[in-house]
Length: 215
Image 1 (cartoon, rainbow, N blue to C red):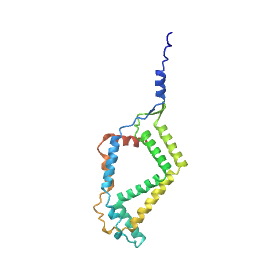
Image 2: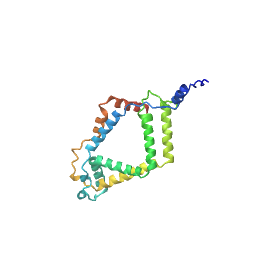
Image 3: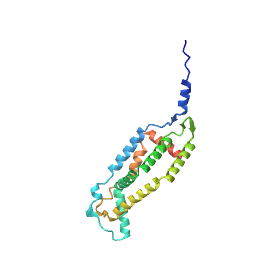
Image 4: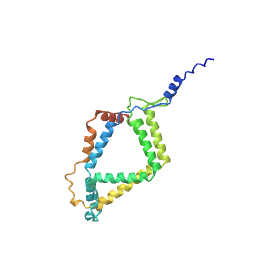
């Protein structure tokens, strides 16, 4: 007795796999990660010694509000990288203390980066066999972000952490006497940002230009 002929299912399986696939064409992450690493190293190289920041002998009460404002302005110009690190630590501690908010923020950031920022504008986004335009992707990500902000406390948590960090920075800047600081030799950090993002890898520049043209 002969066996029944096999049922051809390869085409159906391939069609099913094609429909359920998610195509997200993105450029190589290596140039972007290299640039971000260079930016981080450059920023950290401009940080001041932490012993200067926490020098107790340099702490004194300001004589007036105008003096406190002047101190804050000078200290921010001198310790700006250190202050940014303090803000980042406060924000990181707040997010780690609230795992759900941290997971929400990481998910949203990953969605924006991989579905919109790093995706070339001339290549469509295909999810489960359906093609989404740039406008549809932006609209969907915007709705998802708005929904996450409304139903979670991630936005209020970030704002609270930033406000706490700013209060710490302003309090330290007001009580830290900047008379012993050499402010004239400080190179503007903005030039470092420009030099890192400005030249070098054309793929990074083209990706940045592509994102800006779509906003």
